[in-house]
Structures are given as structure tokens and as C-alpha cells.
Length: 381
Image (cartoon, rainbow, N blue to C red):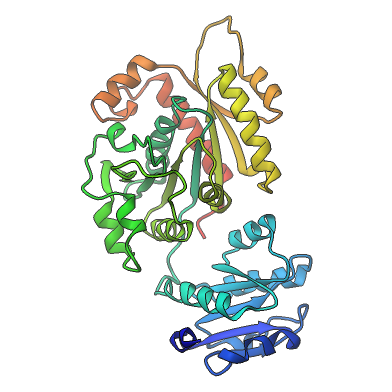
């Protein structure tokens, strides 16, 4: 238990009295606050805390209210939730409430110490720093144009926020990422340099890796070499996204079509997921499977929005967006028109469509999508 000696000062553990004896081994390094699950938040006892571990009962309204009060009144203090039963839906709910990590109850010393150490490493002077919303873009199949949507959406959202605002696109399509080529930038460093930073990850390192892809859009490039799709450490990726949220005004994640453990966890942590596909039968079939799976894993339907790309304007179409909505049993948030010649011209130049033809139908569809997405996102927290 030498690891306990490295615990930061000011750690407070708030839990029912019968749970506290399990942490006797670190009792000299932390402050234990005995408190029944439905008792009010013991503010006076934790006012000087630098980090709080608190027992949570997700079935108790007052228990969840304690978390909300902690985040509102002590926004710079990391909170770790202790749960008797850890499940995906509850974990997502607590992470959305601003909890830094989750540990199982009764406490296991090794897990608790690790969680405290990880949360403490993120403590900084961020009390007044708003967190940017995160939009995950998930493709139904390769070649459906999801990266095009992600890059244009990021630029449009930053533009809509006004001068001086910036978006970041993190290319998580590890084996086929094309964000940098679409935006005409050639980075020296990539996502791998952030994931492998061994505790050196901070704003300065993020800035050195990010490359400017547009006046208001920076890019964290996909690894330059193909790596196994499951090779991402989600904890490391979560830290990258957390720093990006503090550094930018909007964070857009370009995900691969394949759902992995880390990509699923990334979707849980996003404010909104856009499932981008086309009106082709293969794309719709995959979209239906992805939707069903994500919803079965506890992600609320409103947190997943479908965007149909490359929609032709022909009068007589084999499949329309209404047919797609019926097939998916899910509404279509927006459609993006087919303008392949214009897109190829823009991407060959490493530019956005709006830079070479601002009044195109495609640009207007992106403007509409950005407006709809902004309406669905929570205010920066």
C-alpha cells in the first residue's frame, strides 16, 4: 500500500458509516465523513476538500441532488462516485453530471487509490473554465462521407459562435483517418503522441500536436501508422478529450464505423452522437444495427441523431428520407445534398466547400445541420 503515501492532501470520503472501515489502510491520508445516503450534503465538513469521493444511490433523488450541488458549489473539485452496482446507464448519467470517475462499493483499496490518483492528476485552476460540448460523428459504413460532415460541421459551429471561437476535430478513425488531408494540413505529431504522453499531457502538449486545418478549426490527426483498432487506452483518450474541451469551444470526434469498447465509451461521454449514412440499402442496414445496439447499451434515443448524406434532389428517388426514418424507426435530423464534383474540388485543394462556393446547397445544408445540433447541445458547463 505504498501507493497510499502518494495521495494528495485534502481527499474527503463521504459514505455511510459501515463502508468506512474498509478504507482503514488509508485513513491517515484522507478525511472520512460519515453520512447516510439520504442526508443533506455535509458542506461544512468538506469545505476544504481538494477531491471528494461520495457514495451515490442512483435510485435516490436526494443522493443525485448532492452530486449536482457539489458540481455547482465546488466546480473545481473532482468528484468520484461510489456505486453499489455499477452499470453503463448509471455511469453515463453520473459522467454527464460531471463526476470524474466511478468506483465500486464496498470500497476496494487498490481501485480507490488508483481512482484518487488519476483524478488528482487532473486538478488544476480550471474552476472558471467552461467545458466545450462534444459531438461524436459515427459513420454507418466506410465512404458515406461522415468525415466531410464532421469537418464542415466543426467549422460552421465555430463560425456560428463568432470571431475568436475555435473547434477541434479529433480523428479517431485509427486506420483510415482522412481529416488532415480533407483540411489540407500536414501535422508532425498525431493522436498517438498524446495517448503515449505518460502523464505529460497538458494544454501545451495538445497545442503542439494540434494543426490548423482552417481559420477556426484545429485537427488532432489520426496515427500516421495503422494500429490495431482496439489498441486505444480509453482512460488516456478521455484525458485528451477533457483537455480539448477546456481548450476549444466545440470538440468533434470523427469515429470509425466499427464499434469498439473505447469508441462505445467515447459515445457515452459525448453530448450528442450523429450517425451519418446514406440512403443506400447497405448503409441503412448498418444504421439500424448500430442504432439498436447503442440504445440497447443504455444510450438515450435523443442523444443519437441520424444525418443522411449525399441525398440526391431527383424527383423520383428509389428511397427517400421518409422511407429511411420508417426503416430505422428513428427520426432523421437533417439531410445533406449530393454535390460530389464540388466536394472533390474543395478537398483536392484542402478547403471547405464554403471557402470556394459559399452559396452552394451543400453549404446551406451544413448551416442548417449546425443550427440543429447547437439547439440540441447543453450550454457549456
